[in-house]
Amino acid sequence: MPVIPIFMYHHVNTNAGDMITITPEAFERSLKFIKEAGYKTLSLDEVVAFMRGEREVCPGSIAITFDDAYLDNYVFAWPLLQKYGVKATIFAVTSWLAASQAASSAEKRAAIDESGGNPLRHRQAIKSIEAGEVHKAIMNWDMAREMEASGLVRFYSHTAAHALCDELNDVALAKELVSSKAAIEAEFGHDCPYLCWPKGLFSDNAVGAAKKAGYKAIFTTRHGVVRQGADVFAINRIAVRDRPRWLESRLKVYTNPLLSGIYSAFRKRGL
Image (cartoon, helix red, strand yellow):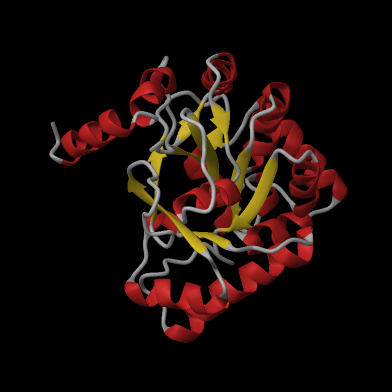
């Protein structure tokens, strides 16, 4: 039975060595290898259907996800996804996209130009969001709709305000989950059955609230591959590293049912 590695990205920009950042060169190298080696990128609908035993997938199937919907995903990653015809999913913080959308046309253009020439480092992006200059760090709804129109990219929920869902009371938790789902559905005109926890933090209560809000599957930051029959409300992913040939060296391991299990076991033991 095949297994599916779901790779987790955040930033794609020229700030080599920065936190949770992959350079465009490394990202393009990975996409080129994926296409030339015959790996197939899946949508989350395909991943979840496989987990539920509702469909088969071919060996060498993978999925690519991005968290937070950073502006550099639009500036750097998006052209490369188009170039190689690779599918991807972006988990978006809906209040951030809305705040970015509210910026003036001149501000949006300046942010895109600045991101292309001198992109924000991760901590700078967080400070811009906290300062209310969200458009400098996060894409807007128009950009997201442009990406979705290609058929390659889909957007789903990363909550409304990137709150830590393991700490919220029931009222605040419901607001984070329900309003973000509704915003995605209103902006894109499609259902939003998938959620990704901010910073990977959740509790049993949060999972229950997500089910009540109508989510059909939830993605975590827990390391591991996806197997048929696994819990769709606690889906593993694999954080990508910005090292030469990292993805190339890992794909054969993570798409092999036996090797992926052995590698994950050694990794958990710190070996």
